[in-house]
Length: 194
Image 1: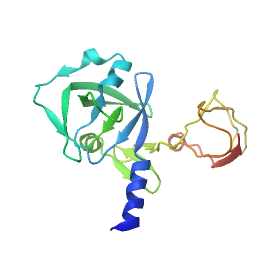
Image 2: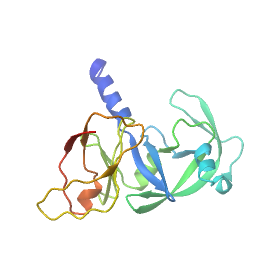
Image 3: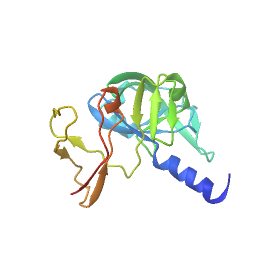
């Protein structure tokens, strides 16, 4: 595979390689990186979460290497519990001072959770498809309902949602979260004007 086809595949992988998780009560975007062996967390995220005191220092010689061969000094390790779709998953992270993303989930994590990445439907599943989550891109905007809504079977409803402040007006499409499937709910894609 080469040329434009390779570029399109690479772009698609890079555009949909994040998942939304929680650490404690704080929402975080985590990058799924099949090229990273270890899972890593940025020191700046740990400081924002006030968890830097939980870092266990490692020897000064421990380093990880980027895809282009640059060395990155490992400051220590930290055990964090990730909340993915209300499932608590403990993960040991290498702590790095200079990291482009807040969290990188690498091959070790993907193997331990028996992860499966479906690039066509942009879904990442864990534990032999017992848990699934949508892969998101930098351009995706997550909207949430303002309150719990009860909708009768085979009916329609207008549902108020919260939209991030940076999202402008215009034509939009809302797609259902994979979590709806686990709740035995169905939602059609909706098109609307803001």
